[in-house]
Length: 285
Ligand code: PMP
Image 1 (spheres, rainbow, N blue to C red):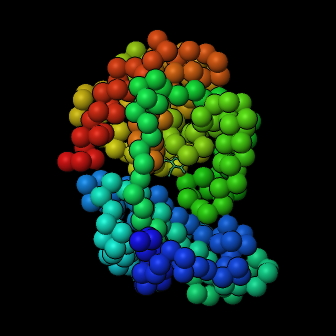
Image 2: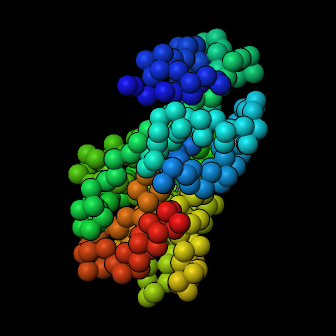
Protein backbone atom coordinates (compact mmCIF):
# COMPACT_ATOMS: atom_id res chain seq x y z
CA UNK A 1 0.00 0.00 0.00
CA UNK A 2 1.41 3.37 -1.00
CA UNK A 3 1.79 6.47 1.04
CA UNK A 4 -0.95 9.01 1.67
CA UNK A 5 -0.05 12.64 1.13
CA UNK A 6 -1.98 15.48 2.73
CA UNK A 7 -2.76 18.21 0.20
CA UNK A 8 -5.02 21.15 1.04
CA UNK A 9 -7.13 19.24 3.48
CA UNK A 10 -7.29 15.92 1.68
CA UNK A 11 -5.34 12.74 2.21
CA UNK A 12 -4.66 11.36 -1.24
CA UNK A 13 -2.72 8.42 -2.63
CA UNK A 14 0.85 9.40 -3.45
CA UNK A 15 0.34 8.93 -7.19
CA UNK A 16 -2.54 11.43 -7.03
CA UNK A 17 -0.59 13.95 -4.97
CA UNK A 18 -0.05 16.53 -7.70
CA UNK A 19 0.17 20.26 -8.13
CA UNK A 20 -0.05 22.38 -11.25
CA UNK A 21 3.01 23.27 -13.32
CA UNK A 22 1.92 26.91 -12.95
CA UNK A 23 2.54 26.84 -9.22
CA UNK A 24 5.17 29.45 -8.42
CA UNK A 25 6.69 27.01 -5.98
CA UNK A 26 7.87 25.15 -9.05
CA UNK A 27 8.34 28.09 -11.43
CA UNK A 28 10.32 30.23 -8.98
CA UNK A 29 10.95 28.29 -5.78
CA UNK A 30 8.39 30.67 -4.28
CA UNK A 31 7.27 29.10 -1.04
CA UNK A 32 8.49 27.89 2.34
CA UNK A 33 9.00 24.54 3.98
CA UNK A 34 10.00 22.62 7.08
CA UNK A 35 11.60 19.27 7.72
CA UNK A 36 10.38 17.78 10.97
CA UNK A 37 11.14 14.56 12.83
CA UNK A 38 8.71 12.15 14.38
CA UNK A 39 10.08 10.19 17.33
CA UNK A 40 8.01 7.40 18.87
CA UNK A 41 4.95 8.67 17.00
CA UNK A 42 5.29 12.24 18.33
CA UNK A 43 6.10 15.34 16.30
CA UNK A 44 9.39 16.66 17.65
CA UNK A 45 9.47 20.39 18.49
CA UNK A 46 6.26 20.89 16.54
CA UNK A 47 5.60 24.41 17.77
CA UNK A 48 9.12 25.67 17.03
CA UNK A 49 8.95 24.33 13.48
CA UNK A 50 5.54 25.88 12.93
CA UNK A 51 6.66 29.25 14.27
CA UNK A 52 9.64 29.18 11.90
CA UNK A 53 7.40 28.23 8.98
CA UNK A 54 4.91 31.00 9.64
CA UNK A 55 7.69 33.54 10.17
CA UNK A 56 9.38 32.53 6.93
CA UNK A 57 6.01 32.85 5.18
CA UNK A 58 5.44 36.29 6.69
CA UNK A 59 8.78 37.55 5.43
CA UNK A 60 7.93 36.53 1.86
CA UNK A 61 4.36 37.90 2.17
CA UNK A 62 2.82 34.47 1.83
CA UNK A 63 -0.40 34.19 3.82
CA UNK A 64 -1.04 30.73 5.23
CA UNK A 65 -4.81 30.25 5.33
CA UNK A 66 -4.88 27.92 8.34
CA UNK A 67 -3.78 28.42 11.94
CA UNK A 68 -0.78 26.83 13.63
CA UNK A 69 -3.09 24.48 15.51
CA UNK A 70 -4.86 23.45 12.31
CA UNK A 71 -1.47 22.83 10.72
CA UNK A 72 -0.51 20.65 13.66
CA UNK A 73 -3.75 18.68 13.26
CA UNK A 74 -3.01 18.23 9.58
CA UNK A 75 0.44 16.87 10.34
CA UNK A 76 -1.04 14.48 12.85
CA UNK A 77 -3.52 13.26 10.24
CA UNK A 78 -0.64 12.65 7.84
CA UNK A 79 1.45 10.68 10.33
CA UNK A 80 -1.55 8.67 11.43
CA UNK A 81 -2.61 7.84 7.88
CA UNK A 82 0.87 6.50 7.19
CA UNK A 83 1.40 4.93 10.59
CA UNK A 84 4.64 6.82 11.05
CA UNK A 85 6.54 6.02 14.24
CA UNK A 86 10.13 7.00 13.52
CA UNK A 87 9.73 9.40 10.68
CA UNK A 88 10.26 12.61 8.85
CA UNK A 89 7.65 15.13 7.80
CA UNK A 90 8.12 17.48 4.87
CA UNK A 91 5.75 20.40 5.23
CA UNK A 92 5.52 22.69 2.20
CA UNK A 93 3.57 25.86 1.54
CA UNK A 94 3.68 27.02 -2.07
CA UNK A 95 2.67 30.38 -3.51
CA UNK A 96 0.09 28.78 -5.75
CA UNK A 97 -1.00 29.19 -9.34
CA UNK A 98 0.07 32.31 -11.19
CA UNK A 99 1.07 33.23 -14.70
CA UNK A 100 4.57 33.01 -16.11
CA UNK A 101 5.55 36.36 -14.61
CA UNK A 102 7.05 36.84 -11.16
CA UNK A 103 4.20 38.70 -9.48
CA UNK A 104 3.25 36.67 -6.43
CA UNK A 105 0.19 38.79 -5.66
CA UNK A 106 -1.84 37.40 -8.55
CA UNK A 107 -1.22 33.81 -7.43
CA UNK A 108 -4.11 31.85 -5.99
CA UNK A 109 -4.77 28.40 -4.56
CA UNK A 110 -1.51 28.22 -2.65
CA UNK A 111 -0.82 24.65 -1.71
CA UNK A 112 -0.18 23.13 1.67
CA UNK A 113 1.48 19.77 1.26
CA UNK A 114 2.44 17.36 4.02
CA UNK A 115 4.47 14.26 3.29
CA UNK A 116 4.98 11.96 6.27
CA UNK A 117 7.39 9.13 5.69
CA UNK A 118 9.29 6.66 7.78
CA UNK A 119 12.96 7.43 7.91
CA UNK A 120 15.95 5.23 7.48
CA UNK A 121 18.46 6.55 9.98
CA UNK A 122 22.00 7.17 8.77
CA UNK A 123 24.24 4.17 9.41
CA UNK A 124 25.56 4.22 12.97
CA UNK A 125 29.04 3.86 11.52
CA UNK A 126 28.93 7.41 10.14
CA UNK A 127 28.27 8.74 13.64
CA UNK A 128 30.99 6.60 15.16
CA UNK A 129 33.65 7.54 12.63
CA UNK A 130 32.61 11.12 12.04
CA UNK A 131 32.39 12.94 8.75
CA UNK A 132 34.60 14.97 6.47
CA UNK A 133 33.72 18.54 5.52
CA UNK A 134 35.30 21.14 3.28
CA UNK A 135 35.01 24.90 2.97
CA UNK A 136 33.03 25.93 -0.10
CA UNK A 137 33.26 29.15 -2.09
CA UNK A 138 29.50 29.72 -2.42
CA UNK A 139 28.57 32.11 0.38
CA UNK A 140 25.34 32.18 2.36
CA UNK A 141 22.81 34.70 1.18
CA UNK A 142 23.70 38.28 2.00
CA UNK A 143 21.29 39.60 4.65
CA UNK A 144 19.92 42.03 2.07
CA UNK A 145 19.15 39.19 -0.33
CA UNK A 146 16.52 36.65 0.71
CA UNK A 147 17.31 36.56 4.45
CA UNK A 148 19.19 33.39 5.35
CA UNK A 149 16.76 32.78 8.23
CA UNK A 150 13.95 32.21 5.73
CA UNK A 151 13.52 28.53 5.01
CA UNK A 152 12.37 29.03 1.45
CA UNK A 153 11.77 26.54 -1.32
CA UNK A 154 14.66 28.10 -3.19
CA UNK A 155 17.69 26.20 -1.95
CA UNK A 156 19.85 26.71 -5.01
CA UNK A 157 22.47 28.63 -3.10
CA UNK A 158 22.88 25.72 -0.72
CA UNK A 159 22.72 23.25 -3.58
CA UNK A 160 25.63 25.03 -5.28
CA UNK A 161 27.51 24.68 -1.99
CA UNK A 162 26.57 21.00 -1.75
CA UNK A 163 27.81 20.41 -5.30
CA UNK A 164 31.19 21.82 -4.33
CA UNK A 165 31.35 19.61 -1.24
CA UNK A 166 30.36 16.43 -3.07
CA UNK A 167 32.75 17.15 -5.95
CA UNK A 168 35.53 17.56 -3.39
CA UNK A 169 34.65 14.11 -2.00
CA UNK A 170 33.28 15.43 1.30
CA UNK A 171 29.93 14.81 2.96
CA UNK A 172 29.20 18.43 3.75
CA UNK A 173 30.33 21.93 2.87
CA UNK A 174 31.04 24.73 5.32
CA UNK A 175 29.54 27.96 4.05
CA UNK A 176 30.83 31.40 5.02
CA UNK A 177 29.02 34.72 4.90
CA UNK A 178 29.82 37.83 2.87
CA UNK A 179 32.20 38.97 5.64
CA UNK A 180 34.16 35.73 5.66
CA UNK A 181 32.75 34.39 8.92
CA UNK A 182 31.45 30.85 9.27
CA UNK A 183 27.70 30.62 8.68
CA UNK A 184 26.74 26.94 8.64
CA UNK A 185 26.84 23.75 6.60
CA UNK A 186 24.56 23.36 3.55
CA UNK A 187 21.72 21.88 5.58
CA UNK A 188 23.02 21.82 9.14
CA UNK A 189 24.31 24.20 11.79
CA UNK A 190 27.95 24.06 12.79
CA UNK A 191 29.55 23.96 16.24
CA UNK A 192 33.09 23.66 17.56
CA UNK A 193 34.43 22.84 20.99
CA UNK A 194 37.60 24.53 22.29
CA UNK A 195 38.91 24.01 25.82
CA UNK A 196 35.58 22.65 27.00
CA UNK A 197 33.49 25.55 25.65
CA UNK A 198 31.08 25.16 22.73
CA UNK A 199 31.08 27.86 20.05
CA UNK A 200 28.62 28.40 17.22
CA UNK A 201 28.01 31.34 14.89
CA UNK A 202 25.17 33.69 15.83
CA UNK A 203 22.14 33.60 13.55
CA UNK A 204 23.21 37.04 12.26
CA UNK A 205 26.23 35.36 10.68
CA UNK A 206 23.82 33.88 8.15
CA UNK A 207 22.79 30.61 9.72
CA UNK A 208 19.31 29.23 9.90
CA UNK A 209 18.03 29.31 13.47
CA UNK A 210 18.08 25.54 13.66
CA UNK A 211 15.69 23.75 15.96
CA UNK A 212 18.33 21.10 16.70
CA UNK A 213 20.75 23.96 17.40
CA UNK A 214 18.34 25.27 20.03
CA UNK A 215 18.00 21.81 21.57
CA UNK A 216 21.80 21.56 21.79
CA UNK A 217 21.87 24.88 23.69
CA UNK A 218 19.36 23.43 26.13
CA UNK A 219 21.16 20.11 26.53
CA UNK A 220 24.57 21.73 26.95
CA UNK A 221 23.07 23.98 29.63
CA UNK A 222 21.82 20.96 31.54
CA UNK A 223 25.32 19.47 31.38
CA UNK A 224 26.89 22.74 32.58
CA UNK A 225 28.77 23.15 29.33
CA UNK A 226 29.03 26.76 28.25
CA UNK A 227 27.79 27.68 24.76
CA UNK A 228 29.00 30.92 23.19
CA UNK A 229 27.46 32.37 20.04
CA UNK A 230 30.29 34.18 18.32
CA UNK A 231 31.63 34.93 14.86
CA UNK A 232 33.98 32.15 13.84
CA UNK A 233 36.62 32.07 11.14
CA UNK A 234 38.19 29.20 9.27
CA UNK A 235 41.04 29.42 11.76
CA UNK A 236 38.67 28.61 14.64
CA UNK A 237 37.50 25.50 12.82
CA UNK A 238 41.06 24.36 12.06
CA UNK A 239 42.20 24.57 15.67
CA UNK A 240 39.04 23.17 17.27
CA UNK A 241 39.21 20.25 19.70
CA UNK A 242 35.88 18.99 18.39
CA UNK A 243 33.49 19.90 15.63
CA UNK A 244 29.94 18.76 15.02
CA UNK A 245 26.90 19.55 12.90
CA UNK A 246 23.27 19.62 13.97
CA UNK A 247 20.08 19.31 11.97
CA UNK A 248 16.73 17.62 11.94
CA UNK A 249 17.88 14.77 9.71
CA UNK A 250 21.48 14.46 10.95
CA UNK A 251 20.67 15.12 14.63
CA UNK A 252 24.15 15.59 16.17
CA UNK A 253 27.04 14.32 14.07
CA UNK A 254 30.78 14.65 14.65
CA UNK A 255 33.19 16.09 12.09
CA UNK A 256 36.69 14.63 12.04
CA UNK A 257 38.28 16.18 8.96
CA UNK A 258 37.96 19.85 7.99
CA UNK A 259 39.68 21.01 4.79
CA UNK A 260 42.08 18.10 5.17
CA UNK A 261 42.99 19.04 8.76
CA UNK A 262 42.25 16.42 11.37
CA UNK A 263 39.85 17.70 14.01
CA UNK A 264 40.98 16.85 17.55
CA UNK A 265 41.99 13.21 17.71
CA UNK A 266 40.36 12.32 14.42
CA UNK A 267 37.35 10.72 16.07
CA UNK A 268 34.14 12.37 17.34
CA UNK A 269 35.01 14.10 20.62
CA UNK A 270 33.68 13.50 24.12
CA UNK A 271 31.30 16.49 24.18
CA UNK A 272 29.98 15.63 20.72
CA UNK A 273 29.28 12.07 21.83
CA UNK A 274 27.68 13.20 25.07
CA UNK A 275 25.38 15.62 23.24
CA UNK A 276 24.45 13.00 20.69
CA UNK A 277 23.51 10.60 23.48
CA UNK A 278 21.55 13.26 25.38
CA UNK A 279 19.79 14.28 22.18
CA UNK A 280 18.73 10.70 21.53
CA UNK A 281 17.29 10.43 25.06
CA UNK A 282 15.63 13.84 24.90
CA UNK A 283 13.97 13.12 21.56
CA UNK A 284 12.36 10.00 22.97
CA UNK A 285 11.48 11.35 26.41
N1 PMP B 1 20.64 25.14 8.08
C1 PMP B 1 19.96 24.90 6.96
C2 PMP B 1 20.27 25.68 5.74
C3 PMP B 1 18.96 23.92 6.96
O1 PMP B 1 18.27 23.66 5.85
C4 PMP B 1 18.71 23.17 8.13
C5 PMP B 1 17.70 22.06 8.13
N2 PMP B 1 16.40 22.53 8.26
C6 PMP B 1 19.45 23.48 9.29
C7 PMP B 1 20.41 24.47 9.22
C8 PMP B 1 19.20 22.77 10.59
O2 PMP B 1 18.00 23.22 11.14
P1 PMP B 1 17.08 22.23 11.99
O3 PMP B 1 17.87 21.82 13.17
O4 PMP B 1 15.92 23.08 12.37
O5 PMP B 1 16.72 21.10 11.12
